View 1 (cartoon, rainbow, N blue to C red):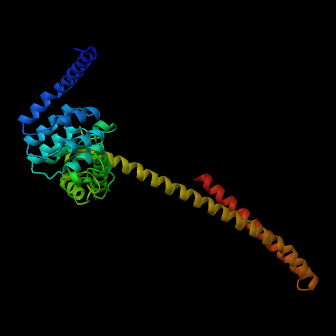
View 2 (cartoon, rainbow, N blue to C red):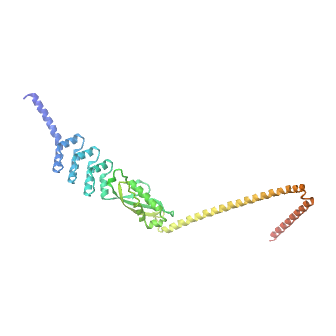
View 3 (tube, rainbow, N blue to C red):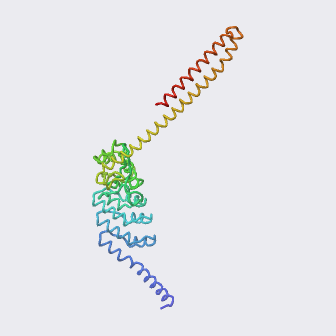
Length: 341
């Protein structure tokens, strides 16, 4: 045999061995898909390898979907895989939705998965609603809501919100934090509108009803089923056996301080009014002095005009001297009388 032909046969043999080895790694997947009723051609498996797609993920996902009665082509699975999606996760969600009789198209599931949402958890939440604490203790801060009724009493409240996932609003819908914030706002508003803290403690279900009627799940990826008040207490007296007595004692103390402040205010007003009266007296005295200063001028004018004579002046002086003497004597008598007494 010609040496060149021998060399060609050897090369062809090596190539055949390489092809056989290359194809052998797909044989098990091909047979597994074939016997499961989810046939996938060898050429499709080779194409997946060349397109950097994991054939095992695609084949196993197709087998699971076919066994669950959901027909999805390998091309659809490859497209989602190449888009960066989690193919097994989507298949799990589709199977769970199919078993729960929830309508969930494959394209919708892929869109939700690519949006970064956990589609499988959403389906589970839709089937089995979950409970969210309000406020959320994992977010840090206080573990209870702080609200004040109209009578000024602070109340501490904790609520639990039961929600169900709304698959139609998963893309673009708000997350759990929005639900917690809205429910907290509604509870604080409901407590703040109550006339007294007693109304809140007697009927906590009114808070729940008001929260549910507010449409808090609008624009979110959830549907609120119920808002339940898990715990409510008066701030600062949650460990007191007699809350009413404690509050009455604190109210009495507050009233005492308020009355003292009002009394101090009235005293300050009285002092200010007394100062005003004293100033008015001094003002009137000054006016009297000014008026007395005008008397000599008037007398001089009367002399010049001939309306008053010298004898009239002396008689007036005598009267004034007599008046001063009488006042002096009367003052001495009063002083002696007070001394004797």
